[in-house]
Image 1 (cartoon, one colour):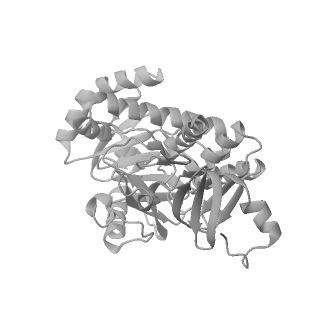
Image 2 (cartoon, one colour; image 1 turned 120 degrees about the horizontal axis):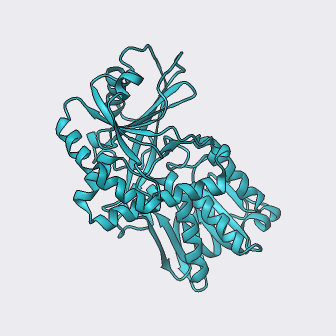
Length: 381
């Protein structure tokens, strides 16, 4: 039971009593799950619980990349997984991005298809040659999935065009783009509220227990019951799913102050996507470096570290902006959910408990679609 002295009759009646669905996590997947379930069940009482004052995971802390797969990442994935699994994952990301645009709207999240570049260093001639030979293969696979021809191409002028140092060129993906993450989240929140769904921030779910036809969610203020519970906490899901193949992965980011006459436009991947950067509001937003300390970055501690922030600043000064004066405005971290495969976990856990987690760093691309699929599973259960 909830702490009776904490809430009034009106608050208990409006927010907590007779809930049909509790969604844990106010991120992209959580919002999408709640909205899709509400569409099929317009009279359902739905409550979203979020542990932070703002979304705590990656949904409001990501870099805003509308991406689905750079060539070096694809080549790396094809070494680890079978071809069908890799291309099915790419297809899911493409479908998810199209679906995100459909439900949010291009203007509502400032979607810009400026293309992306998978940058190749001057000392990576072997990598460059290997990927060049595979570009026809990648383009053929993408054409089957998307209907688009020649998605990938080699651009040997990207370094001179944008002023990069130590870069021989880049593999361009003409279909990728960038969004304004804050606008996307604001629209999602607005849609949720307009649908009559309640959202409580600062309400942490500590445990879930199925009990007959109901499920109980333990919070710091007591227990809340509902007919169904949907777990959409992604990088924070391990505490609820200790046996599943999912782990937190911290991603660190920094952003510069505005730079006069910034020429860089687009999204960029570097070193198999372990680093990534883009332009936004005449600034450079740069993230990555998790490969420097996989063990240390397998954490839910939302903080930055000196070694990775230092590596980001070195990359910024030596490669991205070698001839440009800049200063750092801010840095932060977000928590992703990853596993040994890049396929999300969307399943029924118990009679009335479900989950949609492990987005593999592709929450922007697949989060909305995962929410839709999770809502469908709950409908069918």
